[in-house]
Each structure stands twice: as structure tokens, then as C-alpha cells.
Image 1 (cartoon, rainbow, N blue to C red):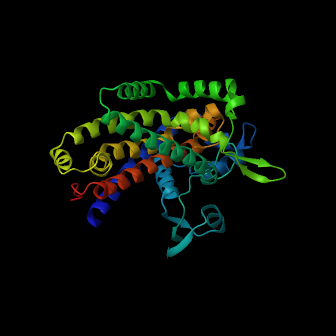
Image 2 (image 1 turned 90 degrees about the horizontal axis):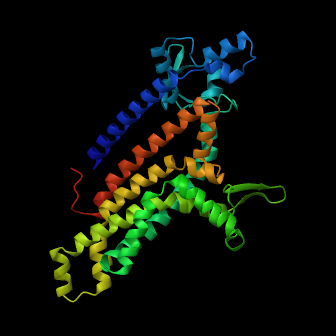
Image 3 (image 1 turned 90 degrees about the vertical axis):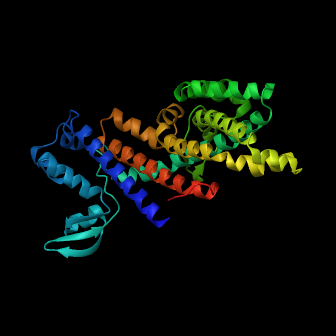
Length: 351
């Protein structure tokens, strides 16, 4: 288990290194002067030079890439100055000449538009997106597994046909299209009955109550975001259940007189969950990345809306930070899922 975990961590590290390289190259070939984007079009020459020096823009591209890696790495080397201490908020490990080896939170640099640390911006929006993705995945998993099991048990019936039709419709409808229809129907046409809004964030500020949670603003984006994974989970659960129900040990369990509930949920469903777990893991990470248009449509203040707004304003550090965070989530989720396989199905050997 330990050797397997270390190997997966090394694979994840290699993936993140590749993503960092691609992100750095892509955003360095885009037009625009980062220093002028940060200081504005009417900034003086001294201010522009100070910003270029801060980000290493006056250096060669290989040196710029090394400085970017040094900023992102949790263990890095910096001159031990008060300015660096304030910027990186590091803890010193040991000295190397005039420099120090430090441990710190990865520094994603500053927004061109707001001058705030990208880490701070993401920390304010990621929890909202995480809540949206998690609730959408729970919604999709519970409903999808239930419909898939019912469909498999009632193969060929109208229930099976209805579940398959719903799955095909859910897969076919893009999230941005489904979001517009759902927002218009339930947030506008039927708003008097549903009590839901077309747009709104999870948190809002009330001058008398302070920050309050608006759960009703979560329902429509949650359903929209969960439709496609729900449809896939229905089909995967149905297919896996039909395959498991045809196995010899299921027939043996029936011959022993086990009840239908015990056969379906205790023996068949557990052994049919592997492809479902794969879908859940992949989709949960994808929902964090795929919530961009859904959040934008519903005016939901999360990572997706922040990234789209940053793209519109050419605020590249925010976009780069969002991409790296999403890649990190994909790597972590894939590692956790591989470890989860062995717990769900004893037939899987990590070696």
C-alpha cells in the first residue's frame, strides 16, 4: 500500500509539472504586457519596471519559468528580506548563504486587476464551487444509482424504458443549454410556485443579519450541473447490475433462499459499484472545472464565474491559478479513487 501510494504521488507530481509547463508557455505567448495590465495604461516607466522586476519579466524565459516554479513550490528558496517574508508568508527552514530555504503556501502571484493575491481570490470562491459540485454529485449519485438499480431489476418494462430515455436526454443536453431552460422555467415561469431565483449566490450580505446562506439559490445550478453525471450513472449502474445479476453466485444466492432485497443490495450492488465509482470520481473533478458556464448563467459566485470574468478582463494570473487548482484536484481525486477500489472490491490488488 505504501509503495503504491508513493508511486501514484510521483505520477501525480509528473502530471502537475506538465500542466505547469503548458500553462506557463500558453500564457507567455498571449499578447499583452503583464506589467501594464497590472499598473494600468497610464502608469509611469518606473512603476512598470518595478512590476517587471517583481515577476522576473526582465529575465530570460527559462529564468522566468524557474521563478514561477519557485513561487509555486511549497518548499522554495528566497532572499531573506522583509518584503519576501510579507509576500510569501513563509517559515524558514535553513540558510544557504544570503538566501533561505522556506516552506510556504504556493504563491500564485497577484491579480492584474484587483492587485490581490490569487490564493486569496480562490480561497473566497472555491468553497462555493466545492459546495455546488458536491451537492450536484450527491444528487446525481443517489438518484442515478437508484434509477439504475430499478431499471436493471425491471429490465424491458416501462420503468426501464423511461430511465433509459431520461439518461439519453441528460447526456444529450449541454449544461449551458439545460441551465438556460431550467433557469427560465423554474426561476421565472414557475417562480411563484418554486420560490427559486433565476440567479444568486450561496452567500449574501444582509445589513442587519450579516452574512446569510441562501440555500434556494443552490437548487437550480445543482440540478443543472448534476444532470449529465446522473444520466451516465444511471446507464453504468444498469449495465453493471445486469452483468452481476447474471453471475453464478447470484443464482446460488437465490437457490439458497436469500431475499430479493439482500441479493440486490447486499451482493449485486456492491460488486457493481466499481464503474460507478470511476464515473463519480471523474465527474466530481470535472464538475469543479465544468461549473464555469453554469455559475455564469445563474450568477453563482464561484470558481467558474471568477475564471470567466478574469478571462474577459485578461487577468491571466487568476486564470492560471484556477487551471492549476483544477489540475491538482483531478490528480488528488484519481489517487483517492484508486485506493478506494481496494476497499470496495477485495478482488482488486494494489500490487
